[in-house]
Amino acid sequence: MSIVYSLAGCDQNNSVEIDRVTDLIPKIIGFTSFTSATVNSEEQKVLLKSSLKVLQRLTSIEGEIGITLRHKISKHPFLLRNLAEILGDNSITPELRKLVAEILRNLAIDRDARQEIGQIQVLITRLMKAFLNCNGPSSTNADCLLPKVAGQALAMLASENVDNCLVMSKEPEFINKLRNMILIHDDNKYIYVAASLLRNLCMHAQPELMESDLKGLSHILPAVLERIMDAEGPELEILIGLSSQICKVLPEEFSQELEHRQIKRRFIERLVDLLNANMKPSAHCPGIRRVILEQSIYMMECNSHYANCFNEYQMMDALSIVELTSSRAENYMVFLGDAGFMECRKPLLALVDRTKELMGRQWLQGINSAY
Image 1 (cartoon, rainbow, N blue to C red):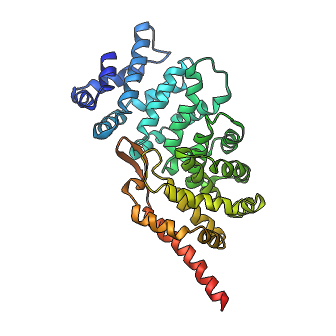
Image 2 (image 1 turned 60 degrees about the vertical axis):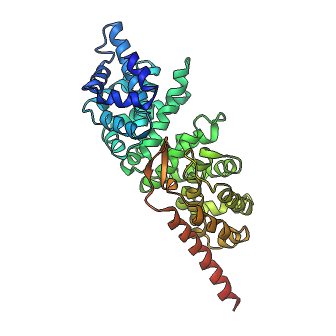
Image 3 (image 1 turned 135 degrees about the vertical axis):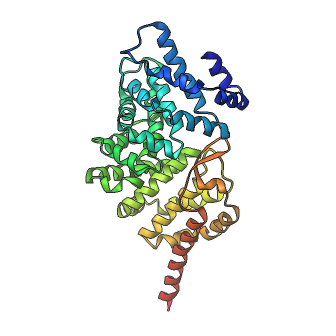
């Protein structure tokens, strides 16, 4: 098993050969059926750990062969059941459960795999339990990493998947717990995972949000807006994505927050500056311009007068550059190597058109009112 693990980490040609070996992957998956109830020898414990490490590595491989391997692994009829049993077995070490969470996170990059994982709801609930246990005692590095990786797996499962978001929304006080992660944690370990989950829940489970959930969203808005002013890269994309969803779900509260803190102009200037500064998409945050445009659209839809402020900061010029520099890469939410996953339903240029429409509408209203 250690040889397979080493080969998978060397180059993609080795991965191709691993894929070609008859029954190798099913045999590796077969070793994941060992749990505390069935493991009765040190050799079986070693095989369980080794098989999980190999699967974690195989599911993280880039390129076409990575897609092939993840598909083959996810389609095994007993894999998800085995992983669910390991996650739910408290006698299994945090290190092994972290490997399970990493495997699920890697598999969930594929739409069909997200759906299949979600159909075994106990996988989601056990990932949630591991994630929400972030305040528990931690004596090892794996103890610390398990909640974070479990959260990453949940965030991936929630992406573009209504059913999985609905399962998560049924967890009592889940929104409130995510809110506290954003407000309380100072080490940033869980803030962005929590923000990503909240964004997806707003997008895909809004009808299920209770009054207390909405109140929780309004409470974190000041912290989110403040972080947007300084954040960069993927973290910035996540925060603006969450901010835009709060604006869409709670438009009046969003406007009041900007006015109350007297940051409307500074926030709009920041959005335009970010649009100008991110003219070349990157694999680590391909959706930065998309979330900026969505934020701008939701703001102008809830208050048309914001268009005047966007105009003052030359938003139209920035939009023209976006039109000229839009890339196919910006249609995807996640990249693994050069392969894009989770294609967005709405093209980037459609968002540009909508932004221009809202700004033009306000400009025409201003012209008409002048006469």
